[in-house]
Amino acid sequence: MTKPFGQTDIAALVARQRPGLSLEQAFYAAPEIFAADTARIFHQDWQLAGHISEIPEAGDYLLFEVMGESVIVVRSETGAVQAHANVCRHRGSRLCIEPRGNVRRFTCPYHAWAYNLDGSLFHARQLDPEHDRDALALKPVAVELFEGLIYVSLARTPTRFDELRAELTPHVRPFGLERTRIAHRRSYPVRANWKLLVENYNECYHCTAAHPEFARSHVIHMTPDRSAPLNAELKARSAAVGASADTIDRIGSQAPAQSPDYSYNRYALFEGYQTGSESGEPLAPLLGDLTGYDGGASDVYVSVLNPMLIYCDHAVLYRFIPVDLHNSIQEIIWLVHEDAVEGRDYDRDRLTWLWDVTTEADKRIIEANQEGIGSRYYEPGPLVAMESFTRRFLDAYLSRLV
Ligand code: FES
Ligand code: FE
Picture (cartoon, rainbow, N blue to C red):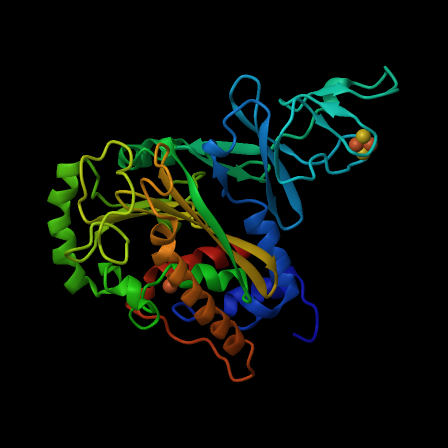
């Protein structure tokens, strides 16, 4: 882009975008678009900050950081999980520098104002008594727990979790995500705009060519006429082990007003695959209340930025983290049953093999995608039926920009 453009130009760009085509180059190249993405998506939407097993004791905290903002997620004295802006109310210093830790209070490294775990001001040396100390508490940030997963939103008025929780809980609860722990997490730096990570995650049109390891075990990359019979057979197997094979779709325009998007879908693995492993054999102890392996995987969204895939013996969580216009991080988090012991109950390399090799491949194809989109020869091209989720993401994204 040679000249800066403002909101009017963004509105014109959105209006010009033809439905059913990939986005115009400017959406991946203009700093103004990236600024709008930050303000309208990343500083608004619910995003996965962690798992409750990361902060089990009072005073345990972790930082959630996105595009210049930092949030302290802490287990308070009462056991509740709270979130505060990581900004001192004196002159604005960051309070917590270390990404994780355990504290009795938050003490500012600058002039040592101290805050209780609930964010209230505990001590401010020489502060004039005329100041209202209650008004100098840390600024609260919205936080929600869903099945042990911690979500944070920086929005002034965030969407509500009530409907999501009411509708998704019966389907996700059997996997006992609250009773899991993080077996491994890995960040994959990707030289691409964040939208290309999300676009890629939401379609499996590329899976046959790019992911032979995934494609030989998961039916999701097949056309519906071929996958539907296998998914129909799965229903009875899922019911037998206590898993839900229902479908819930509240993504995009179907979402209830004031609620984050959400969905649940369980699909089949090919015969011989009990879980997402190289051999098809189990990888770890069964999750939650499951009584066996149904040979399925649940695709779950808690808002579009927070997908997860739940097998019978582990879950894989995805985070799409923007760094700048042309750089992002794909973070993958593997959860296993909280009692599972590495080396005894699971092997970390085997557990992480599939989504490590798949994410490395995604990184390569996404980076090649970004390079091509930067070319003077790029023009938006048509999406196919297997890219319908990507299309829905793009439609929802465009509606957020104007
Ligand atoms: Fe925190 Fe001064 S900025 S105590
Ligand atoms: Fe992929």
